[in-house]
Image (tube, rainbow, N blue to C red; front, side):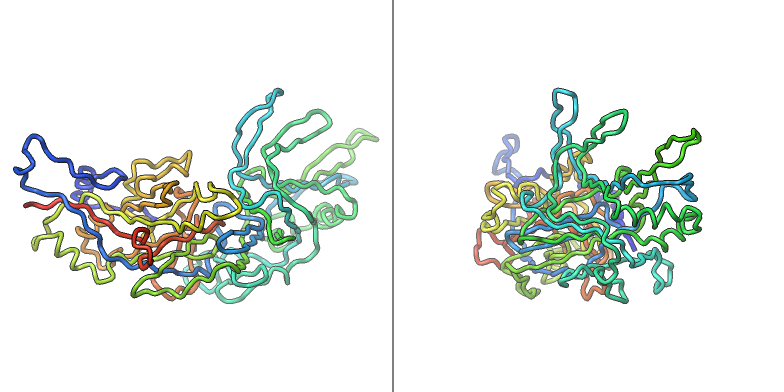
Length: 533
C-alpha cells in the first residue's frame, strides 16, 4: 500500500525551545559576553562527540509502482556498475465507445513521453530552447529500446490483503531479466511480451524541441521520447486491436479495456556496456499514444481526420536490473559499524545510523534533571558525513555528485525528522536548494554532508513514546521534497520502507562510515550544548 510520510506533531514546549534556540547550519561558536565579562558568566558552552554505529543495508525488493516518475534506460555508475531500467505501463483511452466512422484508415501512430526539461533560451524565431533536467550517464552512447504489447495483467487490488489494499509490486533487481515480485509470485516480463510494436536499435535522448507539422501549421513541443510509426505492416496491429474493434464491448469501459489491452512493455538494453537513463514524466497530459486516422466525410469523395488517444493513467511498474560488478555491498557490522557506507539508488543500498548503540537512557540522564527539566541546553546536533575521495574519479567529471543530496529519515517511525519539518529553507521550485539547513548540500571542497538533528534530539529528551526514533536512515536522493514512501517486501529488520525518491535516483555514492580508518573523515555525531557553571 502506498504510504506518505505523515506530518509530525510537537509538544508546545518543544516548539518554543526549537524556535528560540535554532542554530544555523554551521559549527556552534562560543561568543564571549562583553557585558557580563568572561569570568562573570554562570554558564559555559561545550561540545562533545557521541558514539554512533553506522552500517550498510542492501535493498533488494523495493516497491516499484505508484512512483511519481519513472526511469528508463541504462546507467553505468562508475563506482558500482551497470543498471538498466524498463517500464511496464497500462494505458487507458481518452474516450470510450469510440466512433471511428466509415472506412477508417490509420495514417500513423505516435508514441510521446516527455522528459523533464527547462527552457534556457529562445531562438530568433521565438521558439524555446531546452536543457534536459534528469538525464544520467553517457548520452553519446546509444541504447536499444524495444516496445512490446504486455500480456501480464497489473491488477489494482491485492487479493491476499484483509483490508482490500492496493496491489504493490516489488523489484527483483538481482535478476538478469526484467522481473518483479508480487508478494506471491515472480513475474518475468520477457515471458509476457507479445508482439513487438517498435524497436529503436540506437536510441539517444535529445534536448531538441519536438517539431509538429500539420497541414495548416508547424508547432513545437518540449523534448520527449517521441517516435512516429508509419510503416503499414506495423500499423496493422493498431488497426486490428483498436480501429477494427469499434463496436466491441472491450472499448466501452475501463475495466474491460484494461483486461483486453494490458499495456506496453518498454525494454531498455545496453548495446556496448554504457548508455544513459532518463527520468520520464508519464503523468504528463502529453504522455500518450495517438492513433491518427482518416474516415469518409459527409461530403462525397472527401476524407476527414480523427484521433484515438491512449494515456498512461493506469498501473506503472519500473523493473530494475542491477549488475554491480565494481563493488560488493558488505555484510553489515551492526556492532562496530562499517568502514565504508554504500548509498545507491534504484533498489541499491542505504545506510543505518544507530544514534545510541549503548542505549538512550544515559543521554537522557545527562541532559535532564530528575524532574524532566533540561539540565543542559542543546544548541546544535549534527552528523558529519564525508564522501570517499575516490568517488570523484569518474568519467563524468568533477561535478558528477554536485547536486546529489543525502536524505535522512527516521526509520523506526518511517517518517522524516523533526529538523526536516522545521527547516525554514524549504522551497518547492528548486529541490536542489530546498531543506539545506536540515539536509546540507555537498561541500564541493571537503565532500562533506551535514545532517542536522537538533530538533530530533530535543524530541528524544521530551518524548515519553515507547517507540523512540533512535535510528536514522541515509539514502541518496536528488529531490528531497519528494517524501512518499516505498514499501520493502518481507523486511526482516526495522527498515520496512524507504523514501521513494531514492528509487528514482540512479546514481550512487560511497561514504566513510563510523568505523573508518581515516579518523578525520569518519562519520561523527557532534553535539554542542550549554550548561550552568
